Length: 531
Image 1 (cartoon, rainbow, N blue to C red):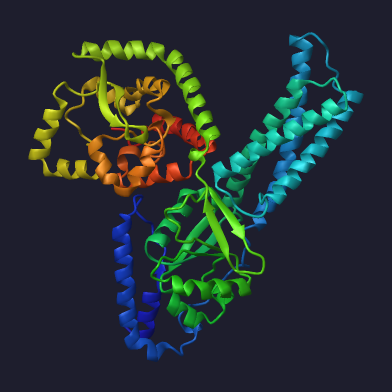
Image 2 (cartoon, rainbow, N blue to C red):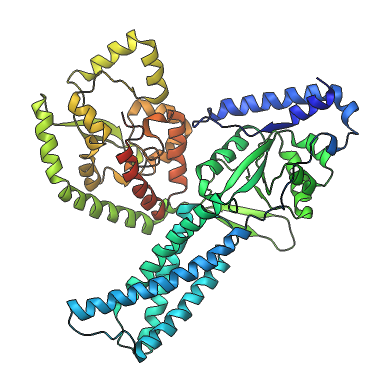
């Protein structure tokens, strides 16, 4: 292999499909560091020969289209949002008219002075909402689905309040159904039309952004996994550059040519401690070049969604102050209130299912319920209730299996679960597939021992595997559902589960709980990772 080919091979790593579950963080970091220093030692021997080689000799010309700005496709959302307001106004108008005419027998004219005034007010508030969307970045930056949904619904709630104030101030006899349904429909329609617009643009190629990932090791792996977890963002990693210091020597402040030769539209820099020194120069070059880029800083243990940035005039300095919502009394009160209301209603609705499952489990022999010792808020132990899904001598059966079966022992050490668990009864297997065995935990939620959403409840022996992160677990009540349950459940390694629990606590918000609950239903129906 020629030195030029060797340099090209060691500098670039083409994006390949990755396994769904990344390696353990420490192992990946060690391997990345080893690869980096090994590459540096080998490059030293051939650097003299290739140092003067122009970048054109390394990378062939492949650009076949004009470079795309990731924000250009977002401008279509202005059109879809305006259309959503028109459709929502018409639907709410018709709904209010029919309700007043046929259900309330009050009459509600379709056209009149009141309706004309109402239309004018609605247009003013809708125009203000579009300006607000523009100001808050909806038409300039791509957002993950749940973050975008939260912002849209919040904006529509504010618009409804403003609209109601205008109608009250003008002393109009307005329809409250028209007011509330109009903005509710607007929020849902905006979300739906944006989703359809993204799908349409992705099919015709105008939504996808060909992305160049710069970095190696844990940070690069995490950045790629994050981009792949949100396909709606449209960032397609087409190439990964691992050896940034060497690349900077060859690029020489020409990122435009580099993106052109790789047919890339966007650059994401995700560097760890091994190559952080080169990031400053790369960012400076990208800023001068005008190439769109993002930086994924090494902030693995900070609450990334709860940061309060502080800027300093005339200084390239930014301080990030973490904000933990769970330490605030009001959010904790709201979360607990929703737990009581939600679990109480769920117990009433699910009472027929409780009766049927109780009968079936008792028919199989033994008690219907099983209370297992778990660790809760502030490390306080409690009995986590479940429908009994195992044989009566389950602990003894597990010990015998782990002594005899090496594969089962490895699986248990990795996930604390067994895919083919001999302890599970027939009715127990059915309940586990549909997560019905966990219904009695609604009682734990109502009593205040658990929450509707939170980390999965763990036993005392598992606290040792959490290590320093156990302090995050102790700060919240364990949940009936959580990030682990909607992210693969038993298919996820224990280490990854600890990372999810820690992330949830550090980045908690009421909206995250709502999003997790919404994700729980399709996961249960698909029986993902349930065994």
